[in-house]
Amino acid sequence: MMSTYLVTGAAGFIGSHSVEWLLGQGQRVVGVDNLRTGHLENLADARSSPRFEWVLADAGDEAAMRVLFEQHRFAGVLHLAALVSVPESFRDPALNSRLNLVAVDNLARLCLEFDCKRFVFASSAAVYGTAAALPNRESASPQPQSPYAAAKLAAEVMLLGYAASYGLEAVCLRYFNVYGPRQDPTSPYSGVLSIFTDRCQRGLPVTVYGDGEQTRDFVSVRDVARANGKSLLDTGVVVGRYNVCTGRAVSLNQVLAIYRELFPGVPPTTYAEARIGDIRHSLGDPQLLQDMLRFEAVILFAQGLRELALANR
Ligand SMILES: NC(=O)c1ccc[n+]([C@@H]2O[C@H](COP(=O)([O-])OP(=O)(O)OC[C@H]3O[C@@H](n4cnc5c(N)ncnc54)[C@H](O)[C@@H]3O)[C@@H](O)[C@H]2O)c1
Image (tube, rainbow, N blue to C red):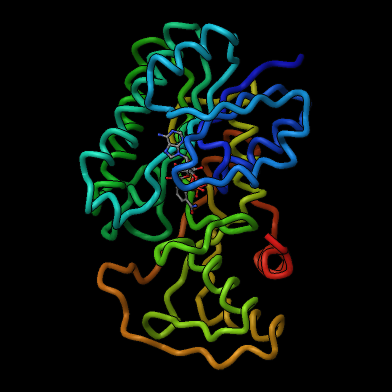
């Protein structure tokens, strides 16, 4: 049956891919974004679908969101809109709390009021912090190291509280390092792969902070969009928090070796002093989401990286 879903942060990197996935499943989608860090071009394909409605609005504006809930009987909400930069959360903790905690709470309460059961929330592997053992498992005690991570964790706790109190079907997805087409490379803190790709495409040398042996669990945005979509649509979800990751660690030097094949003319990599606060290794355990949703990240890193490198944004 065709249902209508609300996606906030729809014009963003993960949002636009998630919207396309849902439309591809024949669903109706209302996409909200205030274009703070997203781009309307990301929704070019989606906007050509008669099942997509674009709304320029602040997801934290309760009155504006209420109008949408009144107009549509949403079957579920995928909440991606956020202040996405960890350094910005340090500079402006009040804004971080408004966007990353209060806005989540507002939307969740609208869901309760309008009997919209399913709430899928974009959390982050950042909630684990540096102290948790690798690979990170959901049972580990989270140790947020930034206002950003603290707000994501607090929002998870609010949602799980509403699940226990009112039966909200809250699914909190902790994304690891998401990569793929449409990730904005303009911020120095943006995903490392979007920056590398942008530099290589322009024939400029890449700078690595540290020795390049730091590792990340890179997960393709196509897999993430599918995890989001399945979490919204699946009838048998279990309330909780779940890693969205591959369970495989890739070092930046391994990434660069692939880039050297794809862009043979790029000048040699420069290595600079490691950045304070950068974590050495990040790796998730994907088992819990696999057990709950039968979800597995299927895009192999080398394949996803090629697609990203050759994509014309
Ligand atoms: N990219 C990653 O590796 C990663 C990792 C962990 C968590 N996340 C989370 O995933 C979500 C999506 O991130 P992304 O990487 O796609 O970033 P993004 O910046 O591309 O997407 C966020 C979108 O939300 C919009 N937005 C921000 N505040 C808004 C508001 N108040 N009202 C309406 N729209 C608003 C922005 O304009 C943007 O389009 C975020 O919640 C982020 O914290 C991302």
